[in-house]
Amino acid sequence: MMCYDAVIFDLDGTLLDTLGDLAASTNRALSHFGLPRRSLEEVRQFVGNGVEKLIRRAVPAGTDERLILDCLDWFKGDYLEHMEDQTAPYPGILALLEALRDNGCKAAVVSNKFDGAVKGLCRKHFGDLLPAAIGERPGMRKKPARDLVDLCIAELGVPVERCVYVGDSDVDIQTAANAGLPCLSVSWGFRSRDFLLEHGAAEILDTPDALRQRLSLPCQK
Image (cartoon, rainbow, N blue to C red; front, side):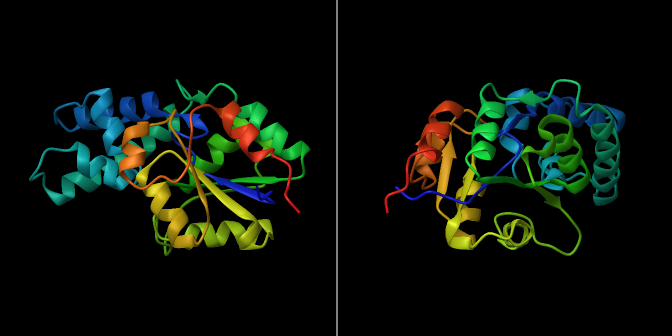
């Protein structure tokens, strides 16, 4: 079993349980513009491709483009204000990140969430446990394109063949493949084990402790 020098994580549904705050801000934005609200389970299915896609999926079909963009802007402001209301690391995540640090393995985040929120949440919850935290930014393609992963690997200064990607969704499986990285999928996030298997997951871990053990296996020389 290969040891890795860097582990690149997705954020929402992988390290942090952000669903409650995402759903709350989505519904406040929809209500502000007189649009029907969405259930928690609906929002769960809408996330994963960035907040613009989240809002486009949340508004009713046929909504005017100007209204969609206004709703998106309102959502972003509201989410930055309320993204700490319910969000927290999944149990066992801090121990996982500490174990990686103690074993000399760098950990980082690449997310389709907008960059300001990614950096704010990672700073708040993980401090210096994540040397790099990268979110959606102008001029760079979102996941599943490899752009943000390539940027992250360059920031970490680690050879690509010494990196592994960890995420909870089909987008993450596609991202890892596009970046030429092995992918470890996790089932505690926004997508089920069955969903991940249907979308090509090669290996699925069911708890952060199982992932910690998987990443801590001794190298085979």
